[in-house]
Structures are given as C-alpha cells and as structure tokens.
Amino acid sequence: MTERAALIEGFLQTAGWAEASRKLLAGDASNRRYDRLRKADGARAILMDAPPERGEDVRPFRHVAAHLAGCGLSAPEIYHADNDNGLLLIEDLGDDLFARLMAADPARELPLYRAAADVSVKLHAAPLPELPICDADWLTDMASPAFDFYAPTGGQSANAAFAQAFRPLAAALDNSPKVVILRDYHAENLLWLPEREGAARVGLLDFQDALLGHPAYDLVSILQDARRDVPRSVEAQIIDDYLAQTGQAETPFRRAYALLGAQRNLRILGIFARLSLRDGKPHYVDLIPRVWQHLQHNLRHPALADVAEAIAGVLPPPTPEFLEQLKSQCATIPTPS
Picture 1 (cartoon, rainbow, N blue to C red):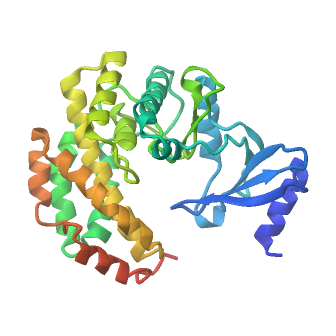
Picture 2 (picture 1 turned 90 degrees about the horizontal axis):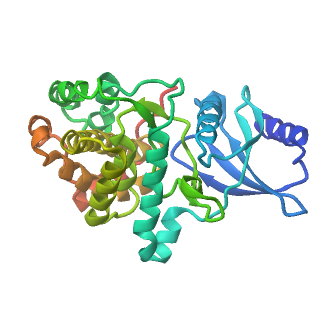
C-alpha cells in the first residue's frame, strides 16, 4: 500500500466510511480525483483526493462551499475534512449532469441554462466573501498560455502586443461592482436536483478557484462552453434574461462579455494545448476548434478591434493538420519540477 493510500484509509476510518465500496467517479484536468463511496445501507458520499504535493489545496473549496450554502445554493455538504493531507468527504449530489440531460433531451437545454443563470442572479446579489480579485493584471497574465503553448513561435512578442491592447480595456472593468465568479461554471459541473426549490435545484461542483470579478464572467463560462455547442440563440436569450433580472446596463455588459470571452477562450486554447504537449492528455486537442470559434466571435465586437489586430496571424487556425501536429507532440514538453 502506498503512503497516499494509507492516508486515505486512515481518513475513511476516522470518518466512519472505511467499509464503504469505492468506485472512481471522475478525474479532471487538475490533479484531483473523485471516488464514489457506497455503504451497505445505500448511503453515498464522494471522496475528493487533492494531493497537496501536487499543488492542490482543499481549503478554498471549503471556504467557497460555505459561502454558497449560506446563499441558499447547492454546494456539496462537507462531512469530514483533512486540510493538511488534501482529503474531503462530501455530499454526493448524484449523476444528473446538465450536459447529460441536455444530450438526452435537447428540449431541456433552454430551461436548464435559465436555471444556471438564476444561480448567477442569486449569487451576484449576495454579500461578498473574502476572495482574490480578478482584475486587469490577472486577466492579462492568465491569457499567456495561448502564446506559450498554442503559438509558441514568437510567443513573447505576441503576448506583449496582446497585453498592450488588452490591459487598458480590462482596466476599465476594474471599477465595476464585483461578484463571486465560480470560473469553471459549465454544463459538466452542474447537477440537476429537481427535489429542491429555486436556484438550489442546481448542484454546484468545481468552484475552488472562485474569485471576485465581473458579473459577465460566469455567463461566458457556461454559454461559451468548450465541451459542447450552445446555440447562439440560447446564448442570446440567457443574456437577455440576465440583463432583465439584474438591471445591468446592456451596452457595457455586452462589451465586457465579449472582452472576457476573448480572454477566457484565449486562455483555454493555451491550456488545452498544454494539457496535450506537457501533460500527455491529447483528447483536449479535439475541443480546440469550438474554443477557436468562440474566440473569433468575441473578437468581432467593435470594442476589441485593437486586440484582434494585435493577435492577427499569430495564433494558427485549428486546421486538421495543425491539430494533428499538436497531438503528435503529446507529452514532449517536460513538466516543471
């Protein structure tokens, strides 16, 4: 038994779940792992294994989960925790992921996206917890993987040109009212809980990287999904609904939405390329064409003309040949020690 396995066994023993069966539920693009536990009486829970030695920390998850629960939203209840060793035993919210439900019945798409937007409306009206700030510097710096991994040739100069065009536009958002942004807010991180009421019908996962930022950020995250196609008509309807419910001024909100969408999709291009080149996960390359389309859509907003010009010709279009080249170089970049 490895040292990590022994830690987990001791954790489950202390929590009273040592005799439960375990089944791998999911891993993700990070170093976290999730196992579903089931007792003989049918009780279920989820084991989150987030090794600190691999850069994981469960404390932000606990902090944000407490805030979400305090807002009347459905974050998993935490049954037992070991912060030092990166282990959590949390509530099992089931298997009804939005992505699965919408794939099985496309007619559910708009109602489920509306439910997800209702969560944002409720969360954005709540008092703010203590969290790091998503400001112009953070947004600019976090786009760098696009130039480091997706287009490494001339990446430094291209990144500088992007930053010069992008940072002033992002700085204009710094004085906007801040809300909690969950960041990884998409259909594979949301669960349908029909037995609950209102916004609590949406189960929330993977929110440990939450920040305080602009209200448009999570709408971009869910409506410009890297993993599934969201019709532009649905995107437009949800934005309209959100504006109507919150009273946000339409023109600056849509400008911010396009700006944050460009930044987010640039970053995802780089992250997906890195996951293949460095981390040996080539299946993420298959998602790049969709992300590219989102990026191009956002860059067409008139306010982003300088950003579009700064990166024109720098990022290779995701042709089949280019994507195959990315896959052929899978795991050829060493992981930083």
